[in-house]
Amino acid sequence: MKRLTLGALLAYFLDPQSGRRRRNMTRDRGLAFFRRALRRSERAGRGVAAEAYGVTKKLTHLKEEEKPQPDDVTLTRKVETEIFRDSDVPKGQINVNAEYGKVVLRGEVDRPELIKALEERARKVQGVQDVENLLRLPTAPSSGDR
Image (tube, rainbow, N blue to C red; front, side, top):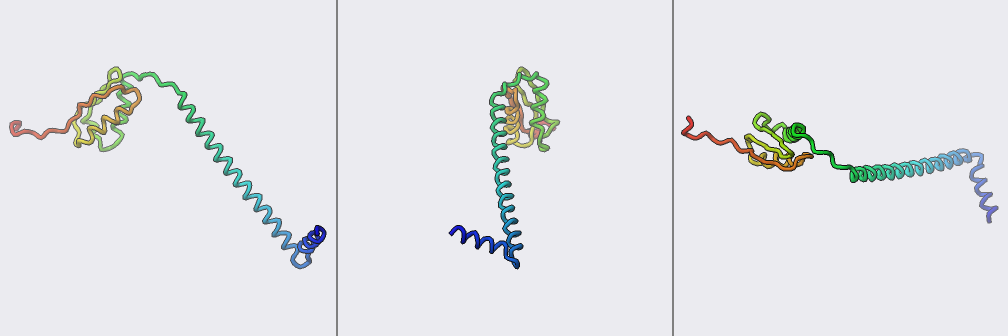
């Protein structure tokens, strides 16, 4: 049975009319199979490497020590940078002060939702221990002020 199979394969590949085309086609298909397998294994390897890199970064962040408390001027600048990030925040109408980690926001804003949003942004800054929000809406001039 083995000899019969071997003979049939030899006749198939060594056929004078189509044997060369069959050999080339078989070779090309075999090489393509190995190229695809190599690409799949490289892709899987990159995926594993990316996962491992991500895990190491997470572990690095877990063991990081908390940074020391920034001085008041630095803290004020950080809070200003955070709350004035959006262009719709009126920079000239808000005053930011910091003392021993406590941030005080003073001034006028146009919209009531902005008061709460600015306080939340200030609380997110590292080093801020407390926020005193003295922001208010502009008051309409009374008839006695004219």
